[in-house]
Amino acid sequence: MPSLIPSIASLMSDAKPVILTCAQPTGQLTIGNYLGAVKNWATMLDDYECYFGVVDLHAITVKYSPADLRKNTLSCVAQYIACGLDPERSNIFVQSHVIGHTDLAWLLSCITPIGDLQRMTQFKEKAAKLGFKAGEGNDLKFTHDGARAGASVNSGLLMYPVLMAADILLYNADAVPVGNDQRQHLELCRDLAQRFNHNYSDTFTIPKPFIPKQGARIMALQDPERKMSKSDENQSSTLYILDEASVLKKKIMSAVTDSSSEIVASEDKPGVSNLLQIYSMMSGRTVADIEGSLKGEGYGTLKKEVADAVISVFEPVQAKYKDLIDDKSYLEGVLRSGASAAQKRAYKVLGKVYRKAGFVERPR
Ligand code: TYM
Image (cartoon, rainbow, N blue to C red):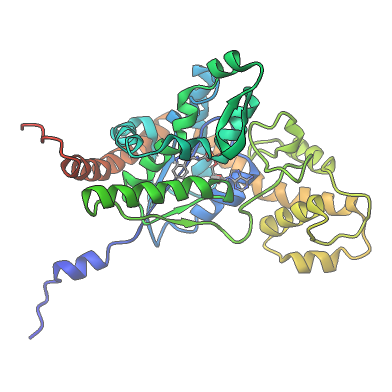
């Protein structure tokens, strides 16, 4: 007679795969964060054990104000929930609340060649803004203004991808859903996990990137050759989830298109293609359907319809956000239980890592 008690193996096979992903609280979330990331994460709550971090330790690699960081961190949590990340079905936590992220980052830094970090596109872009320039073979050279530039590029900026790898490996995540801009950081994370496993025996799961087919790279409205980002100098380029309807409309109506007037997505029409992508994802209609319905219309009509679609998705999100941000004790409760679940998993993995790396166990 078959046993009614489930075997350990069958119980283990019922365990859901783990996803871990995060956003920086460097400002409000953008429509790029929404379409490339958060909207996608909200579809995974039932099929995965989900850890959603707000990575405050990452946010201090650039100039910041402590008061803004505090405000933006709680705001990011409220935006996550307002966008559909249900805390009853996922673990939402703040990175600095969980012991282990920086500890693991240190161990990983000891197996990370500096050259790999200097080659990271995001580091080069951020360092270039501060006066560093990529030289031959991708190593960074000082510009004529080197001494001052060198002083302003902090080593945290260089180490950023190691901390990000630690964020992921600390949870032994199976998959990491992110936008396209994080692809290179994830490759480094996979390399580090493989190197650690090779040096010290199997320890980490090698995490798979989950990059959505649509929306993985939403472009700046004023310069559709560049990714939309929170830190864009031209703020008309960036649509924020919490922008008022009139602001969203104004930014979309002034988006850069091109001199012809045909409404089709194509490589030589980055501005129009970007608007069509946003419209399609916000309305659930296909790009082909939208192109068909707007045949013969001008860009003004396209922009007006894009604005209506964006506003109709964001208005209910904003209403929910307003309720949440006023309910501090609810948000604290979410973070308390998120941190506790995250810490439990993190301690397990960190303990294993320390043992494998040869550290003597702390006497009980
Ligand atoms: P961050 O805060 O820049 O962005 C959060 C998420 O939004 C995606 N994203 C975009 N997707 C499409 N189009 C855009 N224009 C766009 N802009 C941003 C990002 O790809 C990301 O998925 N380094 C990370 C934060 C991080 C992290 C991690 C992510 C730290 N540790 C561990 C995953 C796992 C970052 O700066 O994301």
